[in-house]
Amino acid sequence: MKYCPALFVSAPASGQGKTTITAALARLHRNQGRCVHVFKTGPDFLDPMILQQASGNPVYQLDLWMGGQAHCQQLLYQAATTADLILIEGVMGLFDGEPSSADLAATFGIPVLAVIDATAMAQTFGAVAHGLATYRSRLHFAGALANQVASAAHADMLQESLSPDMPWFGAFFRDKNCQLPSRHLGLVQADEIDDIDQRLDKLAEHLSKTALNKLPPPVAFTSPDIPLDELPQALKDIRIAVASDNAFSFVYQANLNLLQGMGAKLVFFSPLNDTVLPDADSLYLPGGYPECHLKKLAANHTIRKAIRDHHAAEKPIVAECGGMLYLLTTLTDCNGQQATMTNILPGQAAMQNRLVNLGLHSATFPAGELRGHTFHHSQLETTLEPTSLTQPTRKSLRPEPLFQKEKLTASYIHWYLPSNPVVAAGLFQP
Image (cartoon, rainbow, N blue to C red; front, side, top):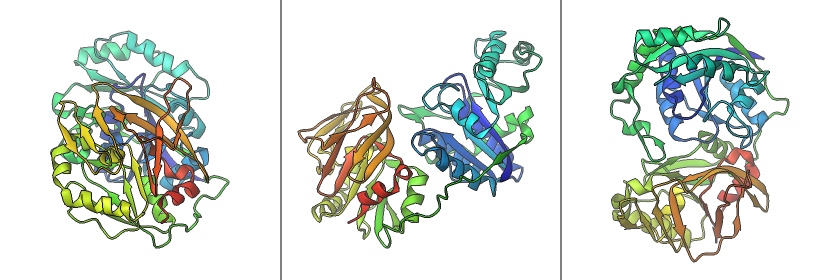
């Protein structure tokens, strides 16, 4: 058993400032010389980039459905062996989703801090905090922090609205100079924000004036009963080329760790900037923002030909969401600009002004089930018949097509490979 101070940062809904406060908290304690490990609840790629920049350590997902309880328990236990502070950022509202942030916090006994956007709110702040704290039993509620507070007088009204037994962590005042920019899929990637460190340091400075400048109480973390460290060496000495740049950056750190843990050697390349594909047995094309880099992707003829040659040689390719779009004949952005892609998959996709599909999905392969999620704004048109359809966790959600062509596996799904290492290995094996 390991003991480590820990806090679960949640909110009544999305857009309340969870990422901003979690990042500020991580940077605050990092600047004080502490080792901070941050986790993100559920499927997300953009928030972890900010949180990694803030903490200086890789950020992992905790998802009771995609990874399972034992997997989450192992990640937390490993973090507790070296961390001075563990932070977990929730997803959406505290009780949203199945499983929810509340499920995760209750499972591991981590106290919940409620970040509540107090814009245009006064005494109702106390009612919202009370509802979050009492809606469910077995939930350790640490207290409330008011975000987007207008003035000291506003902060006083918010604090006075809380019940006597509700801890007040303070007010985080509005500052447009500290806001984190966003686009259609969420926050802008950390390495695209030129002054990201200055913003994080400023956020940390603001947060230092609240009660969060002190470490929370320690939480006990235990290792799972089933050892999870031993992995089959099914990818021993296999070289996997992983696309990695501002167009292809949506990849779980746990996926990369798993591939390496099974013996693979990862080599990274940029479809935007490189003209040569690394010598590799398999190719991994994660999701990202190809629609934001159409001209540059289309102009890189040599790397597109190298990927076509890789496919023609019947070498494995795993393409997820934006990676799949890159394999199409054309891709069109929201402004109607169209560009030629690699033309391995016959078809085209066009970006829409609204979300097309979102949710947790699984797919059945010969070796078992693999889990992941979908989140995209593009509409696909292809004459290629899907090999199968994914299974969403909710009946109201729409399944996604899964395309398997020679050694290519492509879909809109962002796979969480640790959900089934055996299936994951099979996708990359020559």
